[in-house]
Length: 274
Image (cartoon, rainbow, N blue to C red; front, top):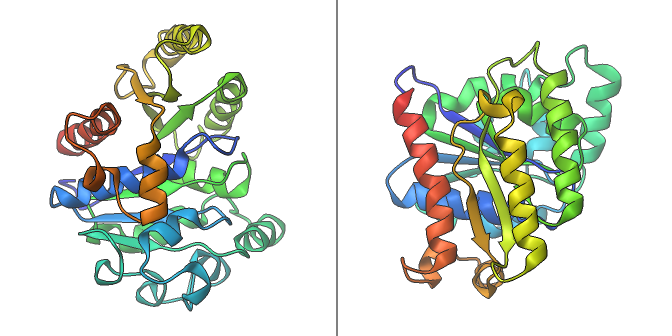
């Protein structure tokens, strides 16, 4: 952005299996392919984003975001960040996760006077090197997700199934609870993942989301109210297995590619606006 700060976007939901990592990795790859410098921050102990992006697996990397949380005042960022030369995607760097990130988060909660603001301070030190920072959150609303929401300009809330619609309310509660620390946090856009257009349940869910996002409470807290419908597709599984992006595996006209490009376009528009 013009002020030397990266546009920071979290991908958060209090349920696993809703496509957070899929969105994070593929949007990062698409932005990098367009020439933007991107940092992906993996806050999930499953390390799926790390293992997809890094040429080395999470267990082979000497440092992780957990080390940064433990030593955020003194640790050199260059030791922790996996540079783009060592990732699978052009212009994409990585702040990797590890299995012990949960222990680091619990330690923060017990011992730090600002347990939800550590990631923000870490990113303040490196964000001038990037255009976009994408944060892949764990499937819980806890210290790590709070850190992501405090650090972010906006967040993506992927919905899939009735349970994740209910999780929508929990994320909004978290957003409200952090209003004092990050009053400008916004929802990037409504996203419905694994959408099956011929299924009545999915159509009903789409209507529910449209009602939620058109409410007076949310209207001013959304960057774009155009809903992104990401279709159910085997291309996502193929990309995860092959460690590629869907943009390398499917045509530009593929519905899955078009859906993720919607998110990319909203991010670029917001980046240019700021």
